[in-house]
Amino acid sequence: MSPAARRPYLVGDAATRGPLAGVLADRAYDSRGMWQRARRAGGRLVCIPKNRAVRGRDPDRDVALDQIGRIGEPAWRERSGYGDRSHVEGGFSALKRTTGDRALARSMAGITGEVIARVMLYNTWRARELVGAG
Image (cartoon, rainbow, N blue to C red):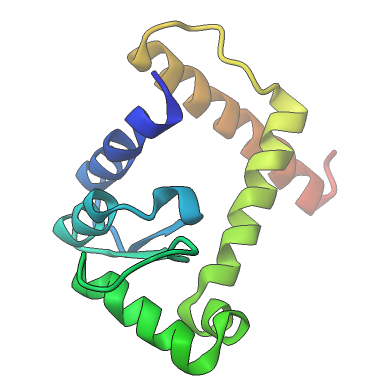
């Protein structure tokens, strides 16, 4: 499954697991469908619109475009929480470096189980480091 094909699945699946406050995403996620999916899931998409973005495709996207136009992209990144995305990216990078970046399973259910196991293992390692038992 291509990354573009997984995007709707990721937001929809996350929403079934509990309240969705928001989705932090890069420009690749700037599509009418993603803005709408995030809103339907009870959250909001925090995403920098593409460089040639036009108004009128989604009301939340128009608000982001207006804010970026008024205060500039660097200030918008800080105020909107977009900068928090770097913490998420850093966490995923560390997880991949320590547990590998390829799944052995082939089905989505198998991949999901494998990722959950890797996250649990990584969190156990980190917890032991933090309490000095490492």
